[in-house]
Image 1 (tube, rainbow, N blue to C red):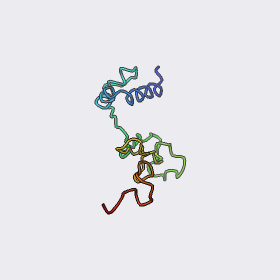
Image 2: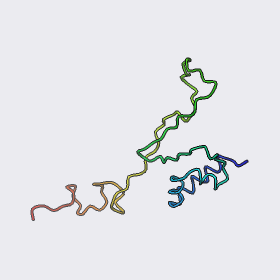
Image 3: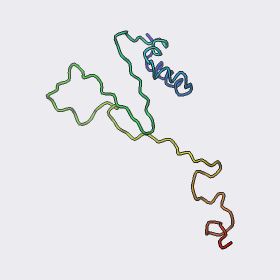
Image 4: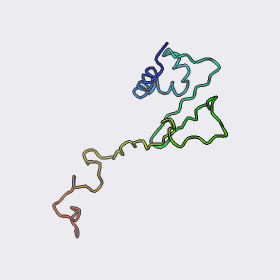
Length: 122
């Protein structure tokens, strides 16, 4: 029996490094999973969604058979899939190279004055 977590990690890593593979994975995840040795029955639908810096997807798991709908769920001990920890945002890229990424910084300033380095009155 294949190791599901290991195979999914391999699929994920390849999608991060291969745009063509990623497009195929997003279009037909069940086929890609089958190609990597995972069993996906024909009557099961598989949906793939990509998290980005501004889009997050939560999965609502199937309700367990032993779950009592009339009982208050526990306040603690929920699986980590229910946590909404902030995810790191990718760094903001600036258009200039070598500027240190800061607008108005000291790099690249002309002149030695504190007034922005621009001569006035010409």
